[in-house]
Length: 227
Image 1 (cartoon, helix red, strand yellow):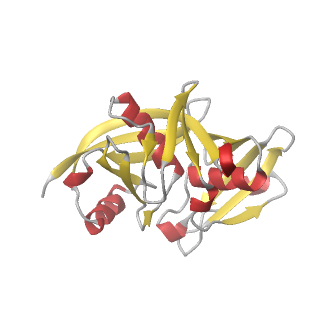
Image 2 (spheres, rainbow, N blue to C red; image 1 turned 45 degrees about the vertical axis):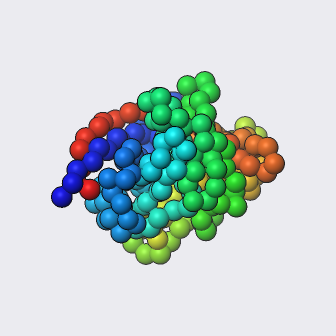
């Protein structure tokens, strides 16, 4: 069995330093060839997403949840762009299967620009109060992709959310950039999304119908894993 390097990040860390969605990044994607092997490794690692960087210079990446490959996802592209720039390997444009994702750094935050049409099907459920969202119990399984949200302060564009993507092998996602792109496209205005335990996602309209999503990224660890 071969080994390869794994970098673990937290993406969309809250202003108080809590929260953030763990992300696994395999910088040498060629060390784990084939979708089946990548899917198996992503399932074993257990992060909501694991990124395999096939070519840092061109930004070619593939994204896997524990249960499926995604054509696009938000926190993996925010985190991977941040990491490649930090290592001096590029990171200005990432190329997952969905299309070109522009990434950049601004005010200490990592940002991406994405097309809402790329987002995988997500069922939205709006609640009257944040307390109702807080009280929800994450399902143990099933084929759901349910994004639950409520306004905290509608005038200021602040909302509370939780996401239960059990169809992707994830009980509850701590911070979901793809859903933030979806909400930005739906509401068409700047937003602050408070998701999960304490994560923070910033959203604003981009050019030509795109949506920009940003957040704080922090390194966690580097280690070797069996590929």
